[in-house]
Length: 282
Figure 1 (cartoon, rainbow, N blue to C red):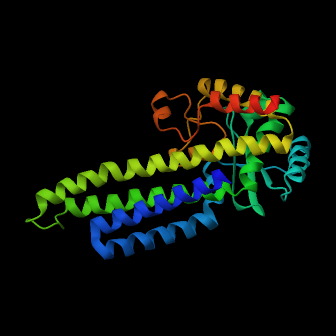
Figure 2 (spheres, rainbow, N blue to C red):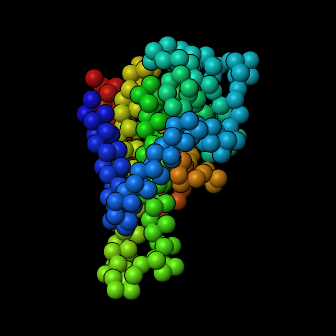
């Protein structure tokens, strides 16, 4: 419950930040424009974000006859989690990773890379999929899409304001003070949005680990899988990954890039493993 409340508050702050920036840059009209942009982008995200992400990574849906063991694991864990069985996709990529997407449990999908299937044993795969099914069960996939969309809307509003200023839409009398205000919003606005989005993503990852461990009844399976994924994702980073979708994956696809850790959407893997090991001891 605490995590749910925290997520709602962070989403509220993120939305408020968008409206505040819109108002500061364009007055009442700016607020209206920012609201319309957010409304449109969230509508688009709600209906199409899952299809976009799957297409972006060229995910291929697999049938029970194509991969009976994978379907068997997902079916069992879905029963444990009391959710409909999602569609299953495979991404042809040597970097070991997985993600879930979809607007609700009835319209959801899980995807695993070929690198993950080669690296992990069945028990560890089960741990990973339980984590992803937890995201689906608690609609984290929708929350992630919405938070990313609002953050994107903030970037969009700031970019419009930036171009407006460059092409001389600000008055000469207030150009000095306006320039300072513009610089503040160009730097602080997107940075604040990024920090809030990271906080949302990190809190949901911890919660998905905990709930996933309950679904599988095997916290150590996920702990072992995370350790393996963290090690090998550094050796084989996902070179075609997009920053806008990094929060969907079970481990940061940019783990091999040290600078990205400063703005990681994922909590430290060591901390996640520690929490799972504590659960196993209870």
